Amino acid sequence: MDVNASVPQVPVTVLTGFLGAGKTTLLNRILTEQHGHKIAVIENEFGPVGIDNELLVSEQGEQIVEMNNGCICCTVRGDLVRILNDLKTKRQAGEIDFERVIIETTGLANPGPVTQTFFMDDSISTYYMLDAVVTVVDAKHGHATLDQQPEAQNQVAFADRILMSKVDLVPDADAKSLKSRLVQMNPRAPIKSVNFGEVAIADVLDVRGFNLNAILEIDPEFLAGEHPDAAPDGGHHHHHEGDDRDGHQHNGHHQHDDAIKAFVFQSARPFEPGKLEEYLGALTQVYGQDMLRYKGVLFMNGSNRRTIFQGVHMLMGADVGRPWAANEKPSSKVVFIGRNLPKEAIIKGLEACLAR
Image 1: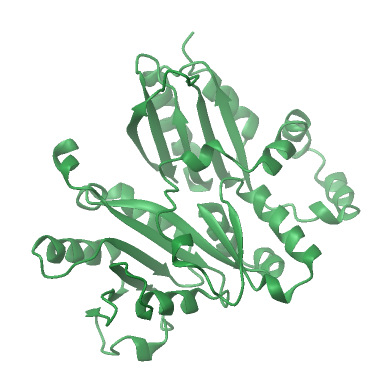
Image 2 (image 1 turned 90 degrees about the vertical axis):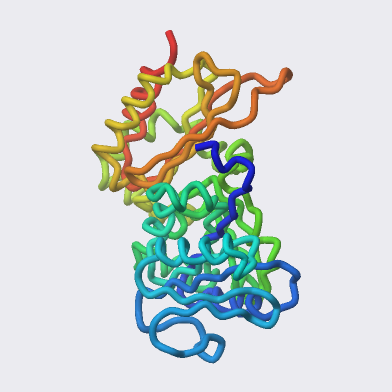
């Protein structure tokens, strides 16, 4: 793996979001504004409707167009791996120049398969680094979209950062209730309000959702909600669906009992590497379809360095991170985001992998 250590990987941002939330506005700005970044923007089309076509040369097939601000624009119909390899070849040959990539997925797409690309194919995973999944959520229609569209729930679950647009169009209370719902689904992603699609490009680049500093500052609102009722929550949810629903109606705050939820595993005891690997393998075999995103920093027995670990569905990857600092207490912290995952069972399973 370390052959390419001298060549820094090209950071990639996956930009996803609810239909009408302002993604296209943001993309058009990236492709035309003088922001001084050399970015290759990949418009990943899974359907007939794409970004404003005046912006792209509207020929059939795929092409790579250089914009006048130095950005590069490519449309993909179909295979993302092919276009990423194509860009890599051209960049290595010095034919084109870019420092980072932004992949825009259509409003109805599940970011899962795009994210998986960065774990599957060695030619991709050694050259490109998934920097972050950024999801744009429309504050005005956010609740309705989450209620009606499973894809939107996936987009929230996969996010490393959530940009909430149109906040200026809704009462404060609505924005707050949407925010608390998003936090329950994905406590890892900082949520930032943006007006009129005016997103600072810095909010999209170098989020480093994957070097996991973010994970160590998980939204405290979420953790506060997580711990006091951690035990009852595990016991009650499945048996008393009926009462649970009724109970929820009276409390405006929690009437959305989304299937997608997050939970955190933490331990100051080190993992036994062999056991952990075997358990995670078994876990993804059984629950992989419903494990949307999981990532963490692991304290491994016998290693003085942090292990950075993350996965999407059945695919996972681990990297050796920096050494534990002298003033740092080594510990593991893993966040799981998924659909109806058996939280208690998974936590017990992980505990069984700790060194005795």
